[in-house]
Amino acid sequence: MATSQRPAHFLAGVLGTMGVLHFAVPKPFDGLIPRSLPGSRRAWTYGSGVAELAVGVAVAVPRTRRLGGLAAALLFVGVFPGNVKMAVDAGRAPLPRRALAYARLPLQWPLVSWALKVRNNA
Image 1 (cartoon, rainbow, N blue to C red):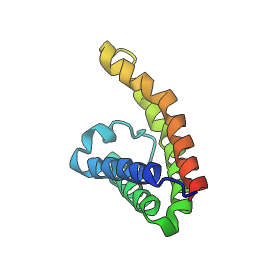
Image 2 (cartoon, rainbow, N blue to C red; image 1 turned 30 degrees about the vertical axis):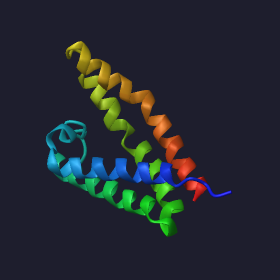
Image 3 (cartoon, rainbow, N blue to C red; image 1 turned 30 degrees about the horizontal axis):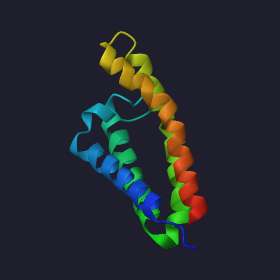
Image 4 (cartoon, one colour; image 1 turned 60 degrees about the vertical axis):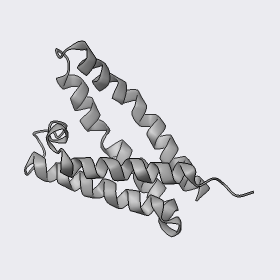
């Protein structure tokens, strides 16, 4: 029985959308970049946007989907420190912003799981 490709296509779409947003509206992403990283925050924002676009393409193409799923899982783990920074920075922010920042933390792990399922089903 063939495995549905919908989860892979949807993951590719999410990654592609987020990658485009890094270029279309970079300022919110700049705030997630720790100041301790070398270079400009905007360069890191654009670099992570390129990474999301590349991983999205790898997930979308059946021949590279297995590697793309693994790369997506690693990308989701790699951006987790930015989500932690967002939560710390939101400590005194209005409740809706704080809630969003804190909600992102546990949601990262289902994304990792989803990416690994896409890899395993490739």
